Amino acid sequence: MNLTELAELVGYGENSGVEFKRDDIRPEKLADEMAALLNLEGGHLLLGIEDDGTVSGLTRSIKSAEEWVMNIARNNLRPAAIPYWETIEWEPGRIVGVISLPPDAPDKPYKAKRASAWVTKVRVGTTSRDATDDEEMRLYQQSGRLQYDRKPVPGTDLKDLDLRRLTNYFRDFRHQECPDQGDEDNWQRLLINTEFMYLDGDRAIPSAGGLLLFGNKPNRYLPHAGINAVVYSGTKKDYAAKERLLLRGPAVTLFSANGDVVETGIIEQALEFVRRHTNVSASIDEGGTRQEHWDYPPDAIREAIVNAIAHRDYTITVTDIELSIYSDRLEVISPGRLPNTVTVEKMRAGYRASRNELIKETLRDYKYLEATGLGIPRKIVAGMLDHNGTDPDLIEDDERFTVRLWKERKD
Image 1: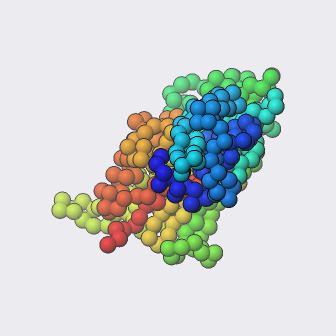
Image 2: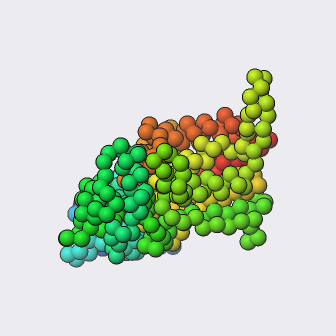
Image 3: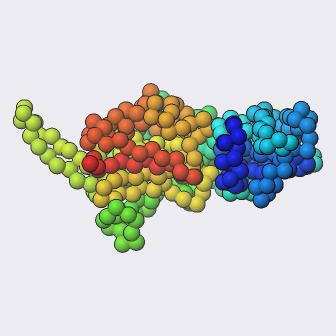
C-alpha cells in the first residue's frame, strides 16, 4: 500500500473492510477486530487514526508496534493468524500502521480471546460483534469444517424417511441389495453406514441430507427445504405475478423398477414449472427432422436448479431457493455465500468444491450432476453461448448466489 492508497481509505472512512484504531487499544479489542474482518472478507486495520479520520500516528516505535500486533495475532486469535504488516509515513513525524487481513482466510471461524473463553466475532457494517449460533455455524460451513447435510435432525426417526425412495435409490441407482420395507433394524444399520441417519446414543436419527433427499415431509423439520417459484409478466418483480408456487417435498423423484415416474421430487417439479412458463418453437432441418428450440436450454436450467439444491447454505433457515421467470430472463437464487475459496471465476473454470457433500454425491448417483464437476462451464456457460450467444450472469451478492440466464441477446 502506498500513501495515495492509504489516503483514499482514510478519506472514505470506516466500512465493512476498514477499521480505524489508535495503537493504545487493548489487545483483546484489537483481536476482536481482526477476527471479525477475517470472518468476513478480510480488510485493513489502520493504527494511528482516530474514529473521525484524524491521523494521530503511532505512539509506539515501528518495531515495537509490529511485535505487539504479531503477538496479538498469534496469542489472542484462534486459529492464530499472520497478518501483513506495513507502515506508511503520513507526514513527517506521523506514521500509520497498516494491518492487512486476507479475503479468503481458510480457517473460519476465527475466535478472539476473552478472559478464558474464545468468542467468534463478525463484522456488521462498521462494527464488530459476537456471532450468533447460526452465524457461527455458517462460518464453519464456509470453511468446509462442518457439513450441514450430515447433521442429525432432532425429533425425527426412520418413519420420517420414504423407504420407497430409498429402496429405489439403493436398488436401482446404486445397484446394491437393501432390506425389506418392514426390516427397520437393517434399514437403520444401512442408513447409518451411508450417513443418511446418525446414531445418537441408542437412537437412529435422520441426517439433514437424508431428510432433504428422501424425507416424507422434509419441510416439517426443515421449513426452508424447498423452492419458491414465481413467474412475472415483465422484467421486474411484481405482486401481480402470473403464478406463484411453493415447491415442497423430497429432492429426488420416485421411479418404478422399470424407470417410470411414480412421484416427482422438487427438482422435477421445478423443471416442469419452467416448461409450463417458457416457450418452445419448432422447425424442420434440411434432413426433414423436427427441431425444437426452447427459450432456455433444458440442460442449463436443470444444472442451475440442481446446483442450488446441492450447494445452497442450509444454515440460512429463513429463505427458500428462488426460481424466478421474467419476460427477458430466468433466475435461480441460492441462499448463502459461495463456499470457502470458491469464486465466480473459479466456477466458470470448473473448480470443484462442495458445501453439502452427501447431497451432491447422491444427486450425482441419480445423474443429476456430472461426475466431472464441469456442469457450470459446460452446461450453463457454454450451453447458453451455444443456445443464443448470451453469457449467463453468475453473481455472488451478500448472502446469496444468483444464476441468471438471458432469453435473448441484447444489442
